[in-house]
Length: 604
Image (cartoon, rainbow, N blue to C red):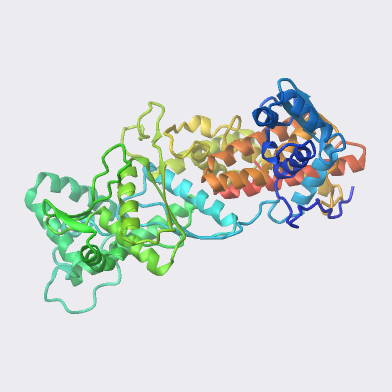
């Protein structure tokens, strides 16, 4: 069965309606109007009784009050105008006034063929594309990444991909913690260990060494040692605070050490984020915002936004309708030191000056919500950002162990991210080797791909704002709502398509035919939801809804696979239709997992 490019009907404006729901809603609106009722009542939704129908319209119930007429009569009037419907196989009025709808198999096939021939699988670009900045990642330099950094990176990366897919310009910024007290601690500890380094010689005027006086391993040991020592020794703490002050005020030697810390740490961070398939457009941090602070503080003072309260410079952000107290946004402490509020506001000044974003999204631990309420209100009130600029806080919950407490190592310590990834990969390797279908070398490569899917899907399948249990055994399973199950489904489809082409047949120009079974139609209906789901995910910034969708799609495919003779089908036209449907299903699944930030192997 060869497929030429058809043309779905167009609306009066000449624009193709992209989603199946929109097409059938238009049909219902026309029926309501013909029956003498307003089109606003013609809302169509997915059926909550799939055993009875595929879609439903409950508008007759709402219209009854307006028209003082029994809902069942209104539903009957509307259905009478759907007997020759372009899109409905059946439209039935059911007491007390529901309209049950089933889609025509031919129309559904036509719709899917249009999707299959569209590079974007029917997902429309935004009518008014924006420039969106996403602040995610947020690690402190000189410290190893741990599981606490996982959610920000995974959620942020997926949101970036989703927003970009809809046609917006997206700028991802890691926003490093690179300018605080931890730098003073590292400098102080380094001076204690290697006092003869030229960075500590005030008389030194030459060029500082290009190579750092420490490795990443040494650097990661220096900070916790210094931090613990400072808590027990006040004089050491004072020295670290002084070093922090000198660094931030341009001390030549300390700035050189800082650059070493940044080079060594960022190189390691890039390696670890690459293993997560997470990329940033900008590697900026708190240090980049420092030059904007003095002029920003002066502006806040000069325009009367900021005032002193017990020695601290603050901006009031409480609003009349607040049900609980919102503390002032603190700009400077009583000793003149800047805070996180200050740095985040200055970063917004920088972003406005350099990028003029239409929206800034912060993917941060939900426990920081009040901080961002203060910062956002201050930024809007003082004109740091334009009134129309969107500022969005996307707070995520905690990743917990099976005990319900924050995820730890078996020894009870904070788990390094690279160790978690390695554990997951080892578990996947064991499971893949148990199957003995691939070589040891391929199994290792595949384990990395599937392991990443297990981690990312395990996280993203949960609503971002909720805490969840990180269960290694469940997340690495090939059964149930897991990343490996989704990948196994894709690999199964790839295998069928490969066997089809190996028999000498091509995948080009195949046409999906009208469904011949309930399970085939169920798969087609799931596939047709893709563009609508992506639009919802985009509008709600909700990657977990992609996971829910592809799990349903994978289940529908596997049911179809088990109940249908695909490659052994003797009718070549029918077989070609099956293959065309499988090809589209694979493309939808692959597009979806790309938005989630992982890929599928060729074999498992």
